[in-house]
Length: 484
Image 1 (cartoon, one colour):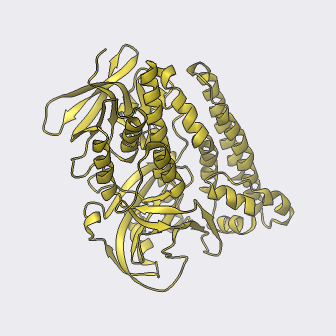
Image 2 (image 1 turned 90 degrees about the horizontal axis):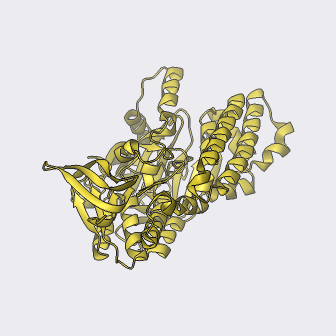
């Protein structure tokens, strides 16, 4: 059928605009591409009326990957500050683990404006203020989108491929009817409630465990951020992105244990107030933060959707639950997936096959580049959420060797080789369970990584692969339960 566009990207956030750049690059700007965004043009890609709620941090490795494959390079003003890496501190602040390497702190209000400017220069069209409500179909293939413009009326546009970048609770994904391979709903245990402020401040006590202009700081603490972590990410010597994330059922248990009724917003305010290195903090009034200084949002912390494609349809970014399970970092996976999705969409259109089989390579390429490690990290995250602060302190102090830290620095599951050697020295029943649990997560990670490396070459093998995956995840859950 004749279509309005070759590719429609539903959602004009970071993942969506990277897909647009990638399509333009890999088609030499020959394909007609449209980005449809529910936000007004003045706030492109914003997650809510509060702005682009995010930690704003991304590794240089992920940005370099995007630049290499799309030709789009970031600089100022979208890069606001550079960092040497991330330091994760134990609850007692006595042990720190470095990971992620060199990176950037982004200005998420300025970045989408720059992204859209570049996309327009590459021939991409935009429709703003459109609330998409469903997909259009031609036989067994998606062929477009429909919705309601902000001013009223009906909206319908057709395309050979629709890329869904509409967010974690995507209505398009939830309603898709030409596949049974894509998961519709995310488990509430795999969602964290997060919030953050962008603040200016005056220097307080010098304490590199509280603020460091060269490093993003993560605080693991089940009292401060149950089931998640607090963060202090520098945006300069006197500017910070500070916030935290929690898992709601664990927050409820924490409140019961401590006799409190705290919510995410209250926890953030307490977290800011107790930081001795940040004196007289106040929400940023910078022009680049005017629509983005504070807000709360939800983020998934699980493996990516088991399948990322259907006939004429692709998932990317938060819509595909791509944020890293261990730290909820979503920018890096979005850059990688958006780049790959655009390239695979172009290849499918040029081959004349935009059906499920024609788009299947996207599954394979994303898993090979990034997704192979996410299921193991999901298991590891669920185990960490069961630990007490004293167990986290003990484990970080005694069980992490150089090879484990190296794995964490690459965003992968640590091997915990030291657990076996130190097993006889572990004191107390709780720490013996901790040691057993860490060994079990390592064993489960090896099985899950090998299973993802064996992702089927075509849709025909997916049913058996998924059955085996969920069997492994069930086995991992049972193993973790023995040590919780």
